[in-house]
Image 1 (cartoon, rainbow, N blue to C red):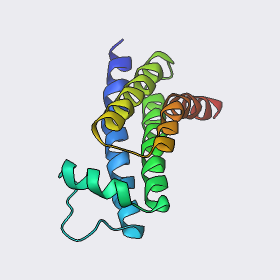
Image 2 (image 1 turned 180 degrees about the horizontal axis):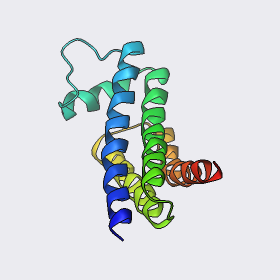
Image 3 (image 1 turned 90 degrees about the vertical axis):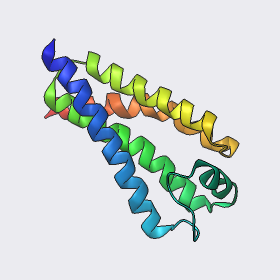
Length: 129
């Protein structure tokens, strides 16, 4: 029980760090416009409307990749599948909230269906070892 709780906490922390790290990696290839800061939601919302396709795809990769990494770290702490369900659900709900808070192109909503499978796949990949 304690190991499962720890696995979820580790997954949440590692997953969020991975997402932010992948966001910053994406900004190496697609830097934000001059004066736009990551913590300024209004400026980010304006930028999303003019962002190049590659930038948006990299953001999608960061979200799904971070969930995958969260699943790996969760599975390394606990081999039980229940923490993976929690991680997949958390990142799916966080993704829905993100889509609600920031205006994204309609096609970007497709990322929602990949969060949960990314967590499950990472679990299966690690448990195969």
